[in-house]
Length: 491
Image 1 (cartoon, rainbow, N blue to C red):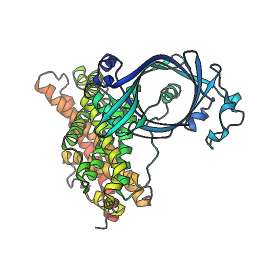
Image 2: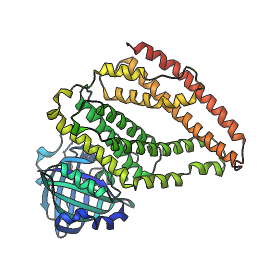
Image 3: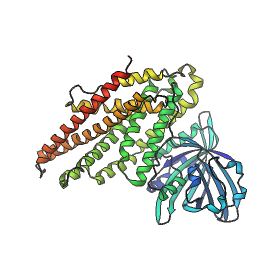
Image 4: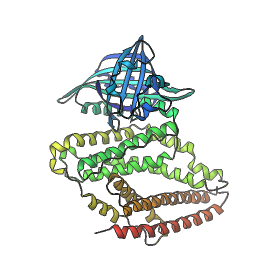
């Protein structure tokens, strides 16, 4: 068995020429290019996929290779997983070559040979460079692979355009260096999606591919690092899903994960870390800029959602949050090298903390008493005493989000009162989101009115009434939340 350690990056197909000219490839001492056809197998009920394994036969030239892969572990684009390979005679499986001990316990292997069949293909051109990389006292041999093609299931296709950096030997840190050097000039974004998942989501597009297993409860800094990596992973998963289905509802999840990632980074930064482990100020700034850019798009989406309540929305109003404009704004952001580089640098910083902190700063093992931090987060939620203070309602989105996320990090915090608190907090978050959409709508309507382009001035009155009703809803929800807050606060 081989244990792969690799970094996966999404790259626009049109950026291929820029990659070929990049100075990183000057470190290559070998190059290869081949067309690969991969047939993935599963049962009618996708038993292998449910067991988190992938089984395929790859045709490379005149050779056929059967491969079994496990999901392994990964964080923010950095993967470690199990992989076993066997040469086979043709495009058919030879299951007798697979050691039965490799099958997961939850997989029913009874009559598997009769039940298994081809379900989709991934066909692509693979260009491969072998790099000899050195930096200061570090050295490594790294395989850089560019795959360009598509996953195919029946008449459906999902484009494949990605770079994989696999560590052959040497120091893992140099994977990040090569990725960083590439991202200086190329619009790269870390990616968690495997080619197998690309195929399975063509078969089951209704499945939620952004769901993650919960993290274990924690009260130490290692747990906080895992929480930050968890939020980064979720951001990457949602970004991949948005690129696939262009469902703009994912923007909300993308924005919330980024906000919570910043919260985790803020608390990590507050620890007395060794100077070599400080989060660079410029990276904090770039995270904030990425947050602002997404916030603008989320507001546009909320505005669009708000206008769905109108039976006839005037064109001049609808154009203020047109999905074509939203798509262009989002695409332009993802094409900016600095955006992808920001996520890469955060991933590298978290990886460094995770691997080196215990050795260099063992006194930082304890982060916070979970109850103390819960009390602190709960006390930071200050719902407006006067419900008509709309701006203060919007300002409570962050504290409520951080409170709910922290409770979700701690599965042991499952008392009835805490569960009710999470329910009330989520209701408040949803209503605050709706209020924000109405407030964005108001700004657009007033702008159009001042420009003399608003054909239905009565929409301003309608907006004012809807905001008032939403504020009343928030006031009623606040009564329940405040009661729970007072009962749960002990400080």
